[in-house]
Amino acid sequence: MSNSSCLAIVLAAGLGTRMRSTLPKVMHEIGGLPLVGHVLNSVVGAGADKVAVVVGPEMPKLEEHILSHVPHASCHVQVDRLGTAHAVKAAETAYRDTSDHVLVLCGDAPLITAETLHRLRKRLSGGADVVVLGFEAANPFGYGRLLENDGELVAIREEKDASDDERSVNLCNSGIMAFTGKVLPELIAEIRNDNAKGEYYLTDAVEVARSKGMRVVSELADEKEVQGINNRAQLASCEAVFQQAQRETFMENGVTLQAPETVYFSYDTEIGPDVVVEPNVVFGPGVKVDGAARIRAFSHLEKAHVSSDAMVGPYSRLRPGAEIGEGAHVGNFVEIKNAQVEAGAKVNHLSYIGDARIGEKSNIGAGTITCNYDGYLKHHTDIGAGSFVGSNSVLVAPLKLGDGAFVAAGSVVTADVPENALAISRSQQVNKEGRATLMRKKLSAAKALRKG
Ligand code: UD1
Ligand code: CA
Image (cartoon, rainbow, N blue to C red; front, side, top):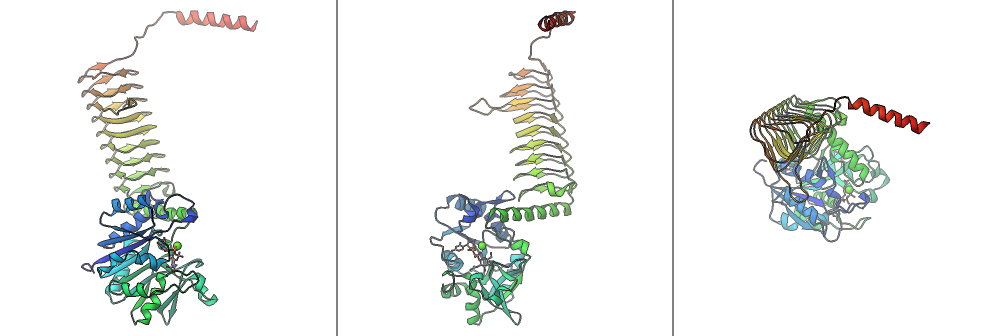
């Protein structure tokens, strides 16, 4: 199979009216990735060397997403939606140059795995002409039913066309089918629209193929893996299945999740072994956490890298470009954006660090802020290794603190600080002996006067 060519046709022209959205249905996200992106990942994982996506007219964002995700994909516009076989026909230019295998999938069923698609391809390699992926439905209403005779698949009957007997069948069509490339064009050409909906049903390919003496078989999948999305509730239930699968995978790979059901991952989260993730943590897209780091409760991370043995949180926010070095600490109510916190450095309390570098083993005091933005441009702050920035300091960028620099607490630093220098930038303190006692007397007399 490894040297057989494979075309995947993904049907994604649906508007998804029940989503009540201005987005094409397949652009809604699961784990931070559009539904169609999940399907594209699986077909590429299953070895599809050609990918064709059938889209609706005027869906520029969808086409853009498809091409950025799989640059060699082609998009085919289906103008009138006349059924699933008609949708496949829209990709005729893709299947005309025959591939050995053709997989047809729906863009709104995102949880299909590459392994299952491999199984379909294996059946084709083993001599089947058409393979239908079926599942046992808890509630079959609305699905096409797989009709078998002596264990052989003879037809797929859509809900609207089914007899009462046929409706009692629980074995359903997932919507995913596989064909050998040489039979697909003639099957599509012979499908008619003589059914209750007046549509060209791809599912009729089963009966057409049987009438031509072709080998038609079915494979089974778990309902969870083939569930499709037509409304927001189904979107949420797919998200839940996806999150649960991610949690299980990470735990299998040696990650401790103290309260797995409260941790949310993205499709591309990478976490090394012996990382501990405390409750209520959200991983947005683009996060990598290296081995033995600890992500403490209520932290939110996106497009960030946490090196091994580092500690983040509780209540930390890592935004795009946050790079946390080995053994570094980022603590409560600290926001880091586009900044490197180098090995062993600490930013533990109530800080904003943006467009900056904090050198190795530096200590940034509570409430320190880098002023990176003047309303027009962003500027960089560079803090050398082994520096100490006192609490509540304001570092006005562009700014450079040399290695070993020391900033006195409460300073507003606007000029560079040389290596090992001390910067103090605040008004001088004056102590007036006994003045507090005098003030108290004066104020209590004033209060007594007002009461009297
Ligand atoms: C389809 C199957 C049904 C199966 C079910 C699984 C057919 C005739 N029926 O029914 O057997 O149980 O999926 O969910 O295939 N699409 C287009 N253009 C069209 C029509 C559909 O691109 O003209 C796309 C849709 O966007 C969707 C997919 O094809 O991604 C399936 O179409 P849909 O109308 O949802 O089919 P179902 O009635 O659910
Ligand atoms: Ca559907």
